[in-house]
Picture 1: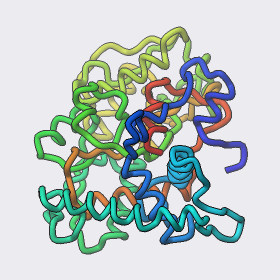
Picture 2: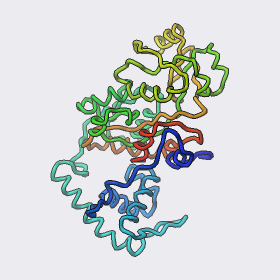
Picture 3: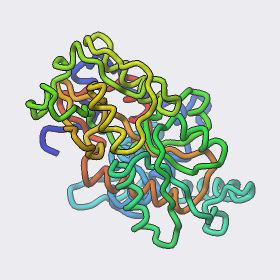
Picture 4: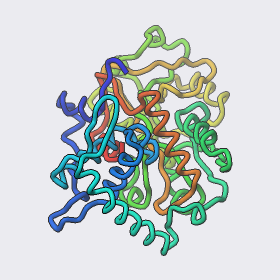
Length: 358
C-alpha cells in the first residue's frame, strides 16, 4: 500500500519508544548444528512451487515470513539456494543438492508425527465441526471465517460470538473451543505456551462517541484530544483483560483516564442506553459494528494498532484450522493487514510476537 511498509522496518528505523530491536534467530541453528525443520519446509515449498507467493500460501504464512526463513537457511548453510529474478525463481546448484536431503528429513519428521497420531495426512485429522469464536459480527475475524468457509466447503466451521481472548483462551485449553482471535501478547505467558498463533492484522484503533459529543466534529480524533476524557475499555471484565491492558498502555502518560469497572452492555439498545447515560467514549477498532446514536472515529497522531492473531491450542490438527490459516494469509496479503501506517503505536512485546510468525 502506498505510504506503508513492514512494521518491523518502520518501528526500528524510527526508534519507536515502544519497540526495540528484532527477534533473534535462536531455535534455528545452535552451536551443535541443529537445523529447524521449519526452514527446510520453507525451502522445499519454494523449490517445488518455484514461486514465493504460491509457496507462502501453501504454508499458510506471509510471503515476507517465507522470504525471511529462506534467507536464514541460506545464512545457516553458508550458500545461496535460489536465483531470484522478477520473472522466475530457480534453485542454484547447492539448492538442487539440498533438495533430496530436505525431502528425507521432512519425510522422517512426518513419519514420526504419524506414529504418535500427530500426522499431516487426511486420515489423521479431526473432522468434527470446528467451533470458532469471532467475538462480534463485522470484525476482521468474521471475514477470515467467511473466506475459510469458501476454501473448505466440506468442513463445518461454526461461529461463536463472545468477547475477549482471555476468556476464549480458557475454553481453548479445555477443548470447549477450537479457535479464536485477539491480542495474543495480552495472555499470560503460561497460557501462551499451550497455544499457537498466527498474525492476522494490525488493526487501527478507534473511539465510539455519543452522536452529540464535541469530538464528533473531527473526521479523526488525535490521541491528545482525548486528554481529560474518561474512556471505557472493558475494565473489570475478566474475559477482556488483554484489551484493557492494551488500553492502559495506550492511555499512560497521555492524560486519558480508564473508565472504572462496569457491567458489560449486551446488545445494541443497552449499549445506546449506557452511552447516553455515562457519555464516556469507548475504545474500539475501525471495524467496530455501528451502534445507534453513536459515531465511530479513527484515532491518529499516532495511529494506535490492535494486534489481531488467529489462536488455537497446540496439537490441534484439523482441515478447518488449515483453512482459517490460509484465509488469514490471503486476506492479509490482499488488504495489507500486516503493514502499518507511517505514524503507528504498538507495545514492543506485541510487535515482537506478531513478527515472530508473520
